Image (cartoon, rainbow, N blue to C red; front, side):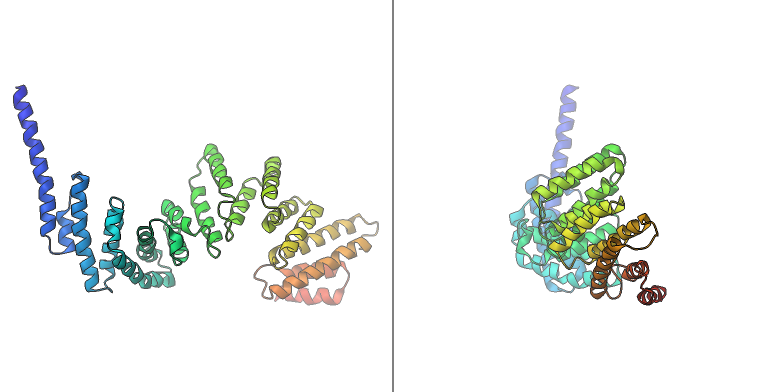
Length: 375
């Protein structure tokens, strides 16, 4: 009986081997890419060497069909998908198709742009992710060799985020994190995806630890600022004040001229109604960047609030010299904000100016900005 069982197993093994060999042979006989794909069903059971033979045929056929019609987007996607899969097993083999890889991915920019225009994020993702994947093959993972990658991969990350593909959003945001234009926005997408995975307290601790570790790794663009903002938001509750101050001290030691650091210290102080500290730190941020419009507006707002406290402390409830000085500073900053942001897209400077002029008892100017607020 034992011998019979052994013989039966040998027969089964031989049949499987023949079946696997038949896959390779059948694929090699295929005349079209679609036929080859059909013949390749079950290729996962093949040896690495035999899988490579199948992919060689698939790549040749898909490349040939793309070359025959370079406006055939289905053929371009099929070729790039095949090349991406093959590159995981044989990068050098995929590199033989360098020219076709470049042509195919560039051909998909048009339908990708159509998707962007129509806000069809599935269409954006289905086309543009191949541009980045092909770059990974062509430049052996060194995306810096392709100037188009940061913009394209950012759009792919946006599409992935909109489609709820969180892992893909993180993956495609990565090459754009250190870009001067898209770094901050790409980091926002990555952090949003990571945040969605937080389900409990332990997840929350792991999340903020990972976020803090990102600071300083992407110095170009605004990625660092986004990371710092996330950390500050996490520690915004009063019970985390010690942890937040520690973060501020650590960042200040590493980067003493970080305007966003002082902006966030000021923001935290303003939220806690610590107006002296807010005014001081907003002022430092503006010294580092006089065009920091949002911070200049917050500074004007805090000067108003500080002046209001002073007025409330006076016996007659009228602005004394200290309050007037604060309000005049507020007006000066608010007028600069007005010049920088005439359509009030960044800040509602009209209200701040109305408030300052009202407390200064300048009825004419107060009326001007009151009317503007109501229009």
